[in-house]
Image 1 (tube, each protein chain N blue to C red):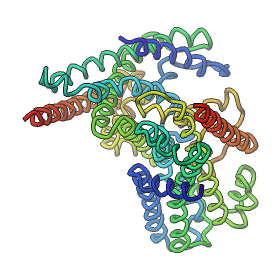
Image 2: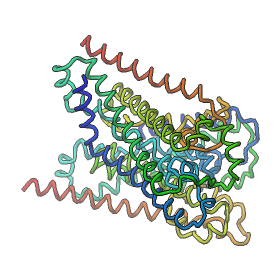
Image 3: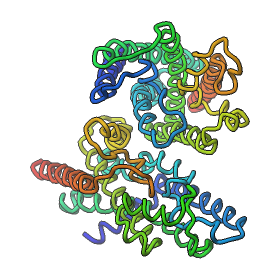
Image 4: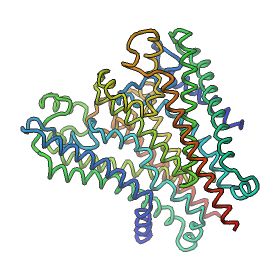
Length: 265
Length: 274
């Protein structure tokens, strides 16, 4: 791993602990919820929570969203004429990005969890925190991986600023849809249950851990689907999107390979 | 100077990014307007209809407004952020600087960036006001939060910026707020342009970061450092209740403008020395 990939989450974790805890005397419930989208819950007046939780995602995009694109911009002909099979190279790079994003999220959470309790108080059950942590690292890793790969793929076509602007806009639109449906429901769980199809389709919905918290805290309870999602569905939907994007990216790189072959003729 | 600014403005207005942002804003504005017309035409009595400023895209209750405000950090930066970066990348800067003085170049580019962003963030919303005045009932006084008229005026006069003016001339008040929004957007875009001069990375992506980070993270000051709202999302919506300190916001805007001018003077002097 490069220096920026390890030091950045470490610094963000420490900075987050200070920003989140300084000036807040009240006891907070969960370490994981305080670093994620845990406190968002449909409310537009708490939009700052979303921006706060979105910042590490954007920094991860700045680090990993240029990785494949950089290669394409600097030495595609040299590499692909010699090695060929660019699709397999692309898939390998995607796997590398996933591993690095996973470590990025893990380092961020560990640093935050180690620093934050030193500054303010948290009252949460330890078992639940472990479950939430595993869930946080998994869902965020998959989400950040597919968005980063998409930035790379779009950057190959429209340049780095085009790729970044389009995907950040897409994420903000997903956040907008989340808030819109929440606003329309007026806090009614029945309304959300009736419109759960739209909730399932929105990948952003699946990384709002506050949604999942209700499921986690009520394992073994009744009507889990009434106000939350099964966890495997949340991970599954983001994972499916990841696979689709890897497929599209692989086809695109293969196309670039074919074009470079034809240009040889 | 004037001809340089005019040429640069026309060039920026014809860019793909500018056109995309304009149509993106028009899409949200027209969606909101069509929704308002359909909603109003289904009502029978004027007393059931909402006041025009409260159904505009900038109002707190507009769903299209949620998207516009969320996308704002991106929309405000994309059209102009790469102006200086691209000029130095394709060596156009050297070509222009051989024909006109450095002061004229930097000032002309900055003024044209401001004008383009201002136009981009004012025209769609002015079109909306114009269409709303024609198609919607201007005497309607309803509140989307279903607060009685007297209560809504009383509560708004306590927190709304220039509330006395709002009570007397609602449409002109909305137009004024849009002009103010356009000016602030222009200043933010110009600040980002100036900041991009300092970036020497070969990836243009980093030209977006300063204002994007500023807008996303400034809200965290509220409750920790300041006792008034610092979140751009709340500040850009009409009728959202909260604690506001307009003197502080004015000082912040002046500070951003001052930093922009300082960066440009610094860069201009550096170029002159070279």
